[in-house]
Length: 336
Length: 303
Image (cartoon, rainbow over all chains, first blue to last red; front, side, top):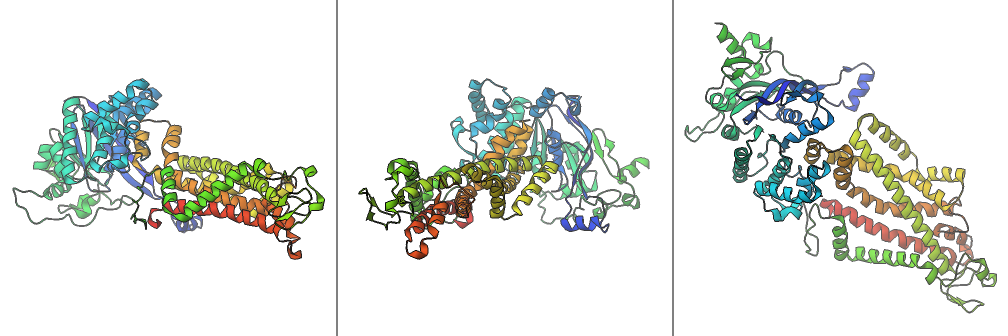
């Protein structure tokens, strides 16, 4: 196994939910809790992304996967925990080293309509970081932009056009070209195809695979679409309510999921061969990250819940070589 | 969302540049075209005032008291025809209006430009940095907007005296806060968009993100409000001068001319106050109509 390119240790990200005016006034008189509400988006996540792999990250909306992606790229600072890029703790990096980490770990965003500055043309969008950080001589920027546009399958003649002159799929290609222009090692893709038409989704996914083949690119591929994750990923991590509940090689996790939540998710994938017509929905809704349940965060919805599940939170433990799951069922099996 | 304009011209795209928008609108709407032409004509007349005006109204030697309060169209002692009459000093009203409008426009444009620069900077900083800086700036804005603007300007001017520069200062003081509030609101919306996150991801300096991304994307609506505010700045200046705390007597603006003619209104010599009044109305109305169209063109649902 190759060394981890990016290593997340105990990453936690909280947001303080703003209190309403009424709560402020009540708080001043001691009628409401003085504690500001805390949204626990990501809670103690350990994750390593190995050089050259595609790590899929799946989960329902609101489970914290986008927040985790933003922490990994350095857009959001973690509340607690540490990040190590190429073996070095990001928090201890010098200014220049930190910039290098930021550029090496690039993000591809979900919404191709909000992720490009509407008042800049393509050349400025793609070449901005090169120009501002003086990564390329002024005269070379146009050529670098052209190279990046060609690589993502766009006509370099479009360089002077503005984002509103492109379709959603083309905009997403511009976003990818912008990331590639700074020669990253790791692309963090936050739901990169979920805003696109299905026919375009396949094109963009294939573009990611092409880039992977050509550049030996590493990916953290965040999605709620299990079909796409299964198609692109080497390993997959399943997230629930801010925590990773299962992680392992994609083939194994998809064929025999260990965690009840992973099993339910994967069981819900429509399949042509099985001619499945009915779905077994997971009962209930995901609890609020403002007030996570006690014990295992999944126990209120879990069909196999044991008494211990509401008392103690299971930790991520190895269940097979290269596979980990956070579930008391497996701990019980291992013990017996 | 985008309704077709009545005459079938293509709808404006969301990110059509403001320059093009104004041109398109001017072509589309006769009122807008009319007011744009009127404003251009007024601005031109004002700039060429020393050449166009038959008389230099500030040169007392060229005035003849014998010509005082002549009705419009009457001929004076020197053989000049006073098309808009003369005031009690024998000053040609046409010349006085041209020069007065110059003072009014200078005050309106200069005060709006300065207030805009201060307000936009304050709003941008508040939106970008948030927290205590945001609170400090916005509480100051709330404080400023809590007072009626005419009251603040009156008090300030009675304390520091008259003068074109002082009137500009007073108007800047009462107007910057509204730009700050608008700019902050617009910039807060833009700041949540993913292209700002992308810029953060590239490690671009905060200053660069503010000036190259946030500013151009959030200033549009503020600029539109600023055009309308030029009109209100001119009106405020006229009010202050009319009340006798604005520009000095030696540099009469439209408001001061109206105040001078005010006492003769009831004796039938209407022209001394009415013509400067009409000029003021024409100026303010043409600016307002243009500003209003601009505002509607930005608010795409109301096009």
